[in-house]
Length: 457
Image (spheres, helix red, strand yellow):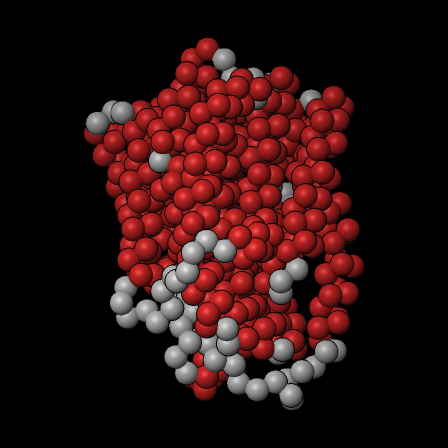
């Protein structure tokens, strides 16, 4: 974030409601566009490559999530620290942070490519993939593996740009990337008929556009806080600590998707895996709205925390919670009232649609609680308590495992669909007291009267 003027910076964060919408609307719009392009991606694959194409992508996704998670790890960790440094007026810290973040992108690119080359095929086989389904998943995965650095940079750099005082610019770049992906999907899947490798290449090119543009705006001469200094190991460890919850969240999603894939192949068939992919495409709409709200409030909450404006944190979190839960309830209602309409976008296969409708109404029944969990985790990241955020992410995984393993033995394929909603309820009951206690302490630690203006853009 630019350190131009103390008065200008403090005024920009003065009105909590205005600040909330200024940061949240661009983040939500960007995430909704990302959700839209993933849905369009699924529509192209479903209609032109069929249920096997959908199942193949779903089997590859848990592995791809490792790459995406590395980008979020750097972006979340660096972004949170960047806003805190700005709230405290630490210009040198901002410059060192930017430099170390770029080094981490390079290091984790090598790590991701090595992991995927060595273990990618085996991870697909562990999910139960075999024959033509395994071949299709590998074809999709191998293209994305060689572009791992692009994917990591596209995940990290827009978050740095957003926390560098340019949320609108970061949003615009994500929109450009999403629209590019849609057009490239049409060209490579429909026109060129490159099938799943074409879909993967379309994703990489669009991510490359986002990464290069974000890099340009971060390094442009007009920016006063360009990266300076060598790799700072203690700072890198702090970035990894603060962003760990973001990585674990993606590892959690990947792990849970992988277990669902395996259980569905054991208790049902490839058609149910494709149905799970369709349900996932629809669920991702809300996930990205909820993530947009959470990402949007992170910079101002971090600023308020660094500046000692604790009551404003409490006010902003309540507003974010109302918006996130409200969207979730609306979407669950829509899925129950109009399942045929939304599912018909992806396929005309009766068996696939029938399986997907059952999954839609069971698997996404507590969708709104995912938003609460996302927001709580991001809150702890924003106030520099990455350990608690990490505990929530790990708890989300650990709570879900026994349900996902045991319920199918009692309820068959319905048990697979019910594992997530039951675990969401369980985890929510656990984390509500933890969150309430932290917010209560902040609300009553009123430092607004004694805190002065902090220099931050």
